[in-house]
Image 1 (cartoon, chains in turn orange, purple):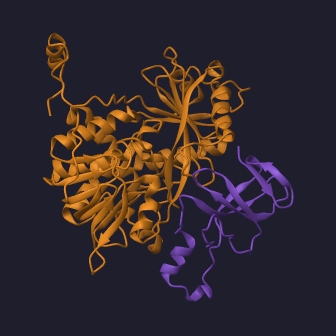
Image 2 (image 1 turned 120 degrees about the horizontal axis):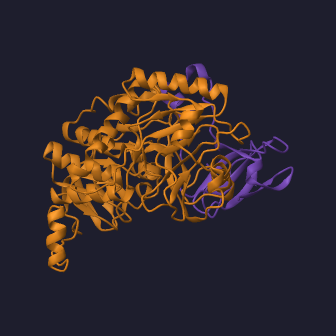
Image 3 (image 1 turned 120 degrees about the vertical axis):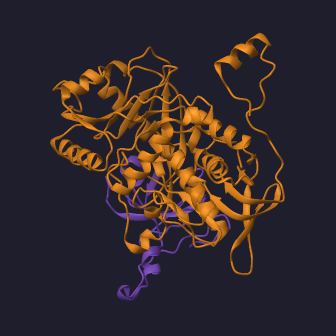
Length: 417
Length: 97
């Protein structure tokens, strides 16, 4: 991989930009790999990268039925944060934030990571008490956060209506300063380029249609649209399609897939330099470097694989924006879309072993997968390479449901599930 | 906006309803004798189909009655409306659960 640098930009400028090479290859699949990762979203690509980088396992293929990063990784509202409630959650999400903090340098790819903080607003006495309790839990877990008064919220978010007659009066809130945003496509592309440079084959337009198993019931390969590929270990990293792939492998999951919509407005001059999330309306927003307001809200509350949602949710998100930031109420929407999010009963991820020997899974991140791309890949790579769950991932195994050890992050995950 | 035909009230906008998840999931009986696996399946494990799905819905802001829908989760098209307690209808050659 030719390194990107200011010097190279200058040199290539002098040479008419003729020296740039493709960021990743488009190889044909081999007949066999040590590891197959199914799904070239952020998590799958990160898994392959960390397998090669941290564990020296380079005989890896990432199979993607569409184009890499075309699923939820390309459809989210780009928020990175670790303000969860339980210790196990704080550990895993904060590790991810710390990986994000140095990711551009590590991948030699500008992921435009902007640690602009997230302000969460409380709109009732109950929400304010809930926020204090949530913040207390965060602080006990070693995650940063500070309470904010109404005036302090207004200082940080001038466009927010905090007047007594606001539709949703702001009684206060808190700020998690180490939160921020990153360019979602760049995260996928950065991991793809780095993994490819270490020898990983990324095979796009390759749909997995079945699994091959040996007599003992262990998976030994996959059937794909490009033919059969054998592997010693396989990892499912397909988010909202986890149920579909699991069914091909003969098991079911405690996961339901929903549409999570997201919106981008026309470009505006800078009006918002932090992420804002409102508890009462379930609305969250930031402003991208191009000037568009990137925002979202709650799920459409019926199962969906459509990658689009319906008008009631659009109205709720737009209404929250218009109510809470009145000066932005006439802004025009440029684009909207949806991802397919895999919601687990406790809104926490499902990591590690499945009922099928040789097949691991990384799913259940629901509406919060983007922030966890680095840690998801990191811990699954560890599990694939060593055969054992990483300490960060161990509490999130599939067996926690039978053990009653759910990690119920429904509230702290940010939106109602 | 989904237009849902409540069996009692007729076609109404989706905002009058709430989806109650997958239908035709029977509580293991006698429940005291259910294995952990059967109980986990009952509480948490779901089929989550990509395609025709059989779901319970309640007309929360109308008659507040429950009913079943056969609905495609890719196109959102409602294929059938039927009562709680009825078997899932065959849809496009697929058998009900």
